[in-house]
Image 1 (cartoon, rainbow, N blue to C red):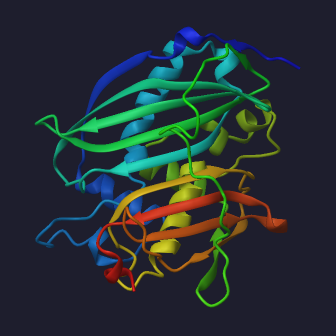
Image 2 (image 1 turned 45 degrees about the horizontal axis):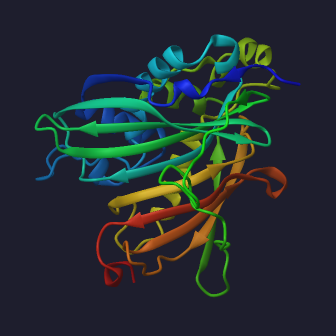
Length: 301
């Protein structure tokens, strides 16, 4: 059943820039919501200041996503969107106290079997105009059609990595469980400053066709990334250069998440950690996960 249509003319729609102050309270609250304990995320006496969690950019990008969807999509289409892919590039570490500017645009629109796949590109710069982070946020609008757009052959820069390799391999794999508390979505909402009522309001979630509230996709990804970094010799605050994934099954509250992956492997871009996160029954909530660590391959051994 078709539930709406997205025209090709939305590609190139742009909003922003929006300015944000990256205050230390926000950085610490986000890390705390994920259960982090490493001093790097909380010690305000560190010479380099409090470190930002790799997924923190979703916090300042969220308002732009809302602005762009409001401009590009009618409400009856927007409500059918689900987070499908995520790709982040960290050009340089964030610093507490700095002011950043984010611009968002519709970067791609494709027909997929479940519906229309649309990618929002979030580009964030510092006060001098230098790039800080770039995120491609892909959503599937289920049951929604779209105009065909001719794209270059092969995987575009907006696409998450293909799942051509399993994170499991004898001898160098790891697995850990994460308890998802009944209130985690509420805590994450307030600490991240990301408000979407399907994650905290049962009435809204059910009206949207969900059985109950579910955990944010970005929270699920952030938890998985945190667990993956804890297996690096440099510890849970190991710096990240880039990451990407695809999303799958919803994460109910309460529940348990199994995160598993492999030790870092060398690549032309830097040491790469592959991972996934599974819900009950082994269904992937996060799949084809890939983290590119900052630093040379020798540092990940």
